[in-house]
Length: 290
Length: 89
Ligand SMILES: Cc1ncc(C[n+]2csc(CCOP(=O)(O)OP(=O)(O)O)c2C)c(N)n1
Ligand code: SF4
Ligand code: SF4
Ligand code: SF4
Ligand SMILES: [Mg+2]
Image (cartoon, rainbow over all chains, first blue to last red; front, side):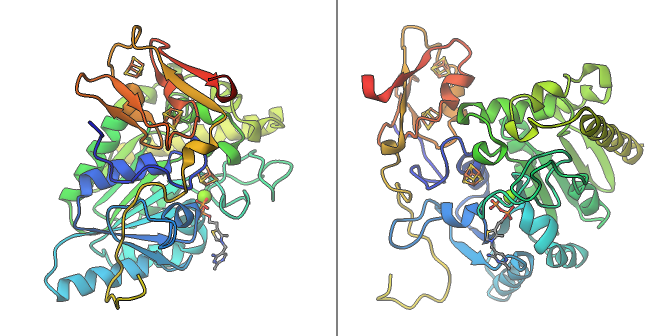
């Protein structure tokens, strides 16, 4: 009995790439009446073409780097005009989301467009060869930060909460129940919904492809990637992250860093600064929860 | 696709958009069914969706497309999946 797949197997994604699984679990919930909007990224390649085939069971609109939110807004408006029901979902990388497409994202969020925006965050411009993005974490090697990135990771989930949109959530594919609950929740809400997935990338983060899920899990367990949900102006932690508000319950950050060669050259000072970033993020979470 | 004028984006879904990705494999995951507890972890976490659940709930790997990444072996709680050298199997 073959499983029903919503991203059909045999994609061009690297071995160990979590993107096909992440998309499958979204499309399984979103259903057939869905349009995906995908800006230039690894996912553009993964979505295939009319010669080699296409893995997605729903239509995919390929978009320029800066424009997915504007295009998705337009598709939704056209669907409304035609009285067609369905989900319009942007599926975009961190480079498009946090840097190049941020203006159109911010605009669509401020207009509270009735779309779902999902950022899969592999923390660099992977498709063009691992260049740093605004969402690359401090200290991480990339081809444009050969000595480690000097700046902090742009806090996109908080920035989107500040747009006062109806729903913001962070997700990890290592926690499929939390992941699916958030997708389901997003489907029941109208207006602009922003979901942000930390998406480990074996060649870009320099780890063995067998470790994808383990690393995604460690990101949550060490507290560098808190699972949370913002709704009706209220922020709460979800799943395993609820207990991690207590710092002593978090695993040491080394357990996450040591599996990835992108952090191999991390100096003690950089590690201290990275830990400060993480502490500041948790303080910000507490502030927003109270 | 060129013989029609579509008003709107469509998808013509098919397996193997990246080719027969099973040919990429250097290591082959092999399930030891004596050890398997049918927990479904490998099925849920296989990043390429290449593990099916059989009628008896046992997992079955689709070697045509499995890329040999080893995620399934890594997540299996009872070490029922061994990554064997493709050259030796
Ligand atoms: C305006 C523009 N600038 C640059 C590019 C080249 N480009 C294509 S994909 C890509 C990287 C995308 O990074 P990200 O959004 O993080 O997605 P990822 O590849 O990491 O999945 C770049 C720079 C482009 N297509 N358009
Ligand atoms: S480079 Fe990274 S994100 Fe891109 S397909 Fe490969 S594993 Fe996936
Ligand atoms: S080796 Fe990778 S692609 Fe193959 S079945 Fe295991 S998890 Fe899936
Ligand atoms: S993860 Fe291991 S025990 Fe669980 S179903 Fe797969 S092979 Fe069997
Ligand atoms: Mg990226």
